[in-house]
Length: 108
Image 1 (cartoon, rainbow, N blue to C red):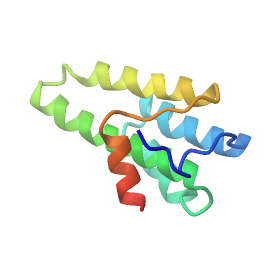
Image 2: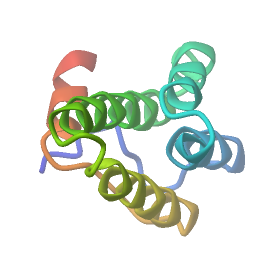
Image 3: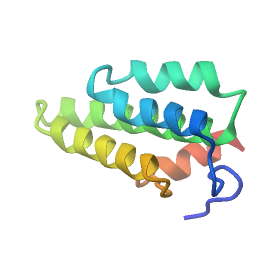
Image 4: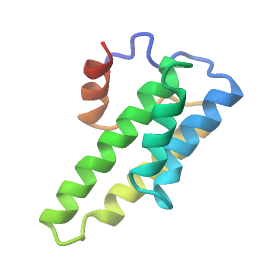
């Protein structure tokens, strides 16, 4: 897991809130929350851009797996989103499996 400059050590409160909305907002708006955060804040902060993009990619992966499992996987992916929201709200680093690396690659 290479964290380069995309996930710096001390996000400010605005960045932390935006990232919390990107991860936790999926409870109410699966794709919409991370997409809106990504579109609105991506030019302001690479930290926010990275977290919103990986949350969006995780939602996309969750949708594909949910379609293949007739929706059984939705709670698993949702819990993962909530865990990510909890981690970043407590100032800890978090990266989703697989899509974190994909998000980093798309940003570079």
